[in-house]
Image (cartoon, rainbow, N blue to C red; front, side):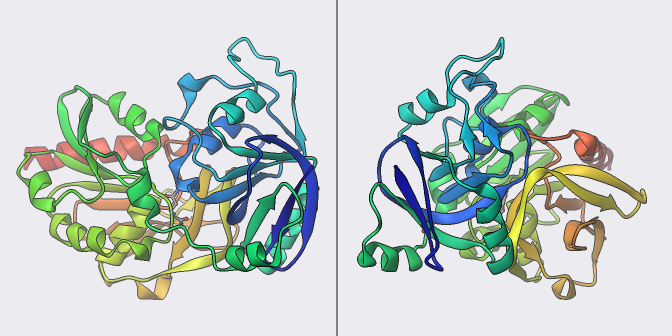
Length: 354
Ligand SMILES: NC(=O)CC[C@H](N)C(=O)O
């Protein structure tokens, strides 16, 4: 038995598996029906207690080869039912074995519908998972919980070469999902991945054809140095930003961001491409968004969330640069918007000819 206690005092009782330790984090929910392994290993979930709304998790097991990073990054994984006997030709181990191996807390047997409704009504809340009911001191600590510098925790420690190709790209790693690298590698790119705080001069002297800005965890405004660095890189080479990359570009361009009530996390979020006048189903994982009135005059909203009309993509007129809030690299989720990687390659090639 283990307990999930929310900031508002609600207590859920469930079955502990994986690491049997006490942990706290921000409680969020993900509506994907599959893709739990990609969710577990997405670095943008660093410091969060992730609840899956789909009722059965673990049914096709784990194969580390398809992970989005070196291991799980969630603080804890919460679900209705955890499958003990996965069935899949590719299954190398069970979800339980995987979480035990990486010392991550699992909690099953939770009424995830009730938990999700609570978060939807009250907004994202902090929570604590304890093996016995939490003490007053633990609850107070949880209320003040803050995961500091998550980008620094998730970025690579040193620069590395990922693959070879004819277009030379620099990737600024804010806590990247590997499918961003795979998506560019497939399109004939040589990728050099840089730590998040790399001085802009080092990137500029490398003679790259483009700069990819990745996803990453936490509040975008907690990265003042990166925002300053981006100001020196914007306009110098073609930029494509995804999720945190999209938010940081907006901040560097003078716009503002705010926290959404309960975020967008799942593999089934409708987004409208305003130019194509077409709605795509996208993969998403974000808690923050760009405030539309704060955008500079050169910014055009290229994509909108078709559930709540929030900004999902921006093009900057006069700059070789566009960014999206959702995940065109999918993993997990539909590949409807992979065309954005093709558009980025076209932008790079056009820029190379000039
Ligand atoms: N996946 C991401 O890059 C998320 C960006 C940011 N951490 C947010 O929650 O909004």
